[in-house]
Image 1 (spheres, one colour):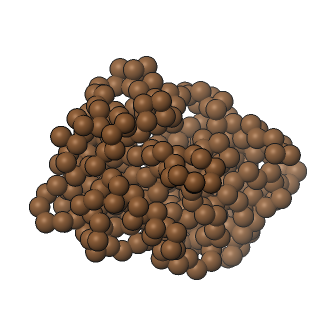
Image 2 (cartoon, rainbow, N blue to C red; image 1 turned 180 degrees about the vertical axis):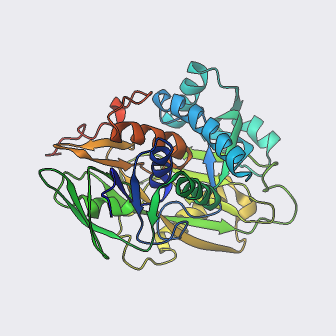
Image 3 (tube, rainbow, N blue to C red; image 1 turned 90 degrees about the horizontal axis):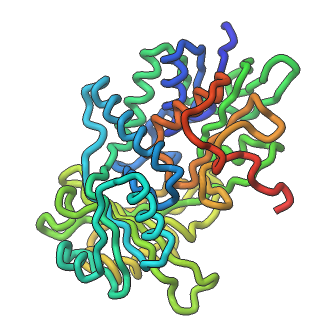
Amino acid sequence: MTAPDVIVAGLGTVGAATCLALARQGVAVQGFDAFAPPHSNGSHHGLSRSIRRAYLEGTVYVPMALRAWEQWRRLERDTGLELLVTSGNLTIGPADGTAVSGFLASARAHDIPHTCLTAAEVRRRWPQLAVPSGLVAGLEHEAGILHAERCIAALLDRARQAGAALQVNERVRHWRVGRHSIRVTTDRGVYQTGRLLLAAGARNPRLLGHAFNPLSARRVAVHWIDPPPGDDFRHGVLPVNFWQLPPDEGHAGGDCREFYCLPAFPRGARVKVAAHNHLPTCDPDSPQPAVMEHEKTARNVFLKTCLPGLVRRPSRTTVCFYTQTPDGDFWLGPLPEQPDVLVCALAGHGFKFAPVLGEVLAALLTDRTPAYDLSRFATNRFDREG
């Protein structure tokens, strides 16, 4: 078999989109995944992911978020599938906290329609949200929810149609850079390529091997809660809501607690609730308990304080993974001292960006300049000694 120009390790969020972008350009790309996406062993499963453009993590993300929205809509047109439904998106927290201030900075810098609300105003509009007095909120008028597994399947289907060679249930074990090519070893064989993208999510730390590795795999307990009778918690009534809450008294470290809640979507589904920080490290290839006691406690305290209508409702818990970086930003680009090996880690907030990240990585893998400022995500930004 002719050696591909690019091998992609991991066919989840970023891997699938990069294979599609490369194949559309006529690049010979071969993708591998240890499982058969969409699957429940990584970071892309579950019914839903939020998508927003007034981006609290920083204004540098907004141009990519705007492009990603356009590209999800293009994928809908190409496939005839519904992938993105609109929804309001609330960011709730202290007025001087990083979440609300970051949301407002992005919304104002890019003229994204939004409204500022007091806690009392939020409670009047959505009585199911018990926003503590003293907090404020920013409402992005038109954000959305993505059908998660359907999006991954659509990206992979279009990539195959465009000519990408995708091999599932074949894990990349390790790689080695030689004088003229990169040798990639899977559990079925050995392959040669000119460029390699490590896009295996929480399994990237292991794939990096002896290369510089600032990443950590974190487990996220995702709680799926039966809503009470009525429509209060369904999509179309309740907006997506992200919470940054002051620390509990005596909480070690004194930093805020962050949670998110997605309304029941699609209709008849459960409400999705999960913590966004204070996540334990884990080995994604080891058996994971469905829920740990401290995760259950944190969920219950959050619900009692902020979403009391969901307290004591039947629920189930699943586990997905974040691939965390030290500063919470993406880690994206060539590995330090290995310019032909690229990596992408998304720090738990990258799903929405998949189509545009595929374009960005395809550009980098083919020696073209991406259309976005990537300096904040540079792979050489962390001190090896730190």
